[in-house]
Length: 183
Image (tube, rainbow, N blue to C red):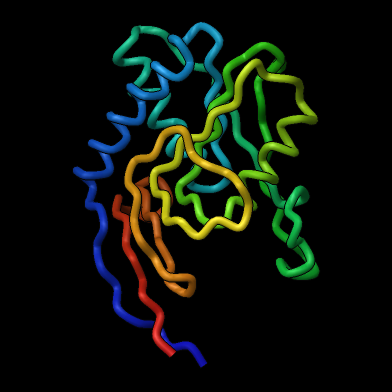
């Protein structure tokens, strides 16, 4: 039986803001500007983070950024573990991704399986000229050879630990917390 363990703060609201500011600058560099840039957030928290990044990029460049949202539920390779009635969210992408620089945005990169599913789903919507990955937290522990191009913060977490990203829009506050599980 696993009992909840200790909870420690990794990032507060100000640190998240600084990380997103830095990530926005790196996204502009990665995409070579905003002309062909599309930010695609993975449901849930990746969508809100992509919105924030798009706003920061627009403030810094004066140009709007196309955005989209992916729900990768049906593309997961572990769908049978989700349960008999998985909750399917909304996928919404710009009409055309072919030739665009698509940057996938997610809150936490762990095993790489969510990103693999996102890549599979994106392939159904066109052929971008480049796909990048921006994550707020990279906690290590890959099961697939997937690496983020842009990382807000790298943290060390054990296999049974949890990294919780809380964002104002969904949780009422901004924070990143490490929850260490104990047996």
